[in-house]
Amino acid sequence: MSENQILTKDDFSSDQAVRWCPGCGDYAILSQTQKVFPEITTKKEDVVFISGIGCSSRFPYYMDTFGFHTIHGRAPTIASGLKISNPELSVWIITGDGDGLSIGGNHLIHLMRRNIDLNVMLFNNRIYGLTKGQYSPTSERGKITYSTPMGSLDHPFNPTKLILGAEAGFVAKTIDRELKHLQEMIKRANDYNGTSFIEIYQNCNIFNDHAFSNLTDKETKADQLLRIEHGKPMIFGANDNKGIYMDDTTPKVVKIGKKYSVDDILVHNEKDEFIADMLSNFTSNDVFPEPIGVLYCKERATYDGLMEQQMQDAQKKDKTPKTLHDLLNAGDTWEVK
Image (cartoon, rainbow, N blue to C red; front, side, top):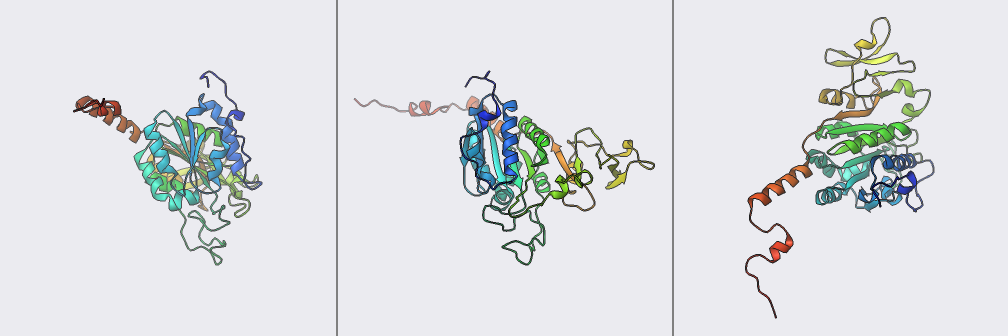
């Protein structure tokens, strides 16, 4: 394919019938991904989607790129090996709250620690959908499901807080119904040099419908949703009349008016770890609005970049064979006639 060829959404849409339940939030995520990829690449043969197991993990079938539907929780390991062996590829991991945070949790946190230059999209519907409605690592305490008929006793994972704790360099959050915002987060993740992580709230209308309705319903979302942007004050509310104010080191929700002005409102700095951690604590908090946007973005050395440099340094210092051909023809060789 020519590098100058103009790609469209259709170029990233495969011929496979999409097999998700009607109304599933995965449709919106797929559509926006297909729509935005022509803007971020001119060579779809260099794009790879890798998934584990779960409803979200059917994603690679529906992208007309290279893809690999792997085993439960192991997508980060396959993706890591692929990216390290072929650094020119754009590698995307598709996972869910069950696949990525349960059996795959260990792989996921070490991926963040290593900071390999690839991208993770975690679809969080707070339920196991593929296996028909068991509670997941992000289900709220007390959640009644087929596997917890009297309510879950587990304390749920907070994905962004977990990933920040693993020292990821890029952490963002969005929602399946926030279409333009979802596109923007994918673009930002693509531009980041290192492991990017996007948590996407995704509605499972069969087994956990309305899990995020307070963030998507017109009547409530203005007061429940905080859209964060670097360099802009943290303002929300139907009339932009509320904001996040720092009382010493304690965040508070205040009304903008007589006592507090816009100048008093905390300005988001996506390079500040303290602010990112604070925002991650707003998740499922009755006092604070739910933040969406880039919580944290700070460059640091990538594992694949350091490995490439190490290999180059070793080749300069060492006189041993540098390729397989050199190795086979080194030392004592003979010819059989």
